[in-house]
Amino acid sequence: MKYNKVYDIQHPPIKECPYCGCKELYFTEQYRGVSVINIDLDDDVIKPDFSEMYNDAEIVRRSKYTYCAGCKKRLFRIE
Ligand SMILES: [Zn+2]
Image (cartoon, rainbow, N blue to C red; front, side):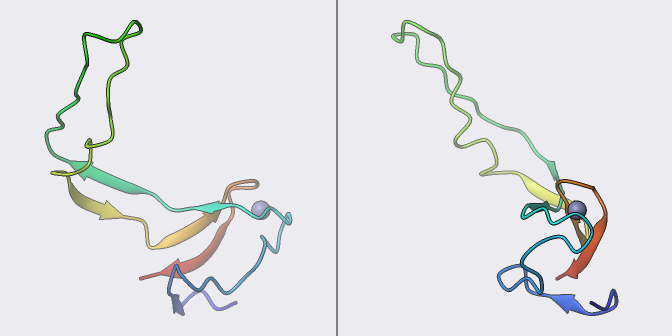
């Protein structure tokens, strides 16, 4: 796996982490914006509705690399 190669996240070059065998990975995004959180007062238990939270958010930064969810090692670069 070459670190300088950029992969499509839809087509990851690995099936598992080469370091620990974990089958989960992650990358991070940072948002900027104002969120509307709906609350229904008729519900017995108040449950804020976060489903529209990111609708108006602007992505300001995204990591260029994926990381293993198990051992946190850097895996491969994404677009
Ligand atoms: Zn790992």
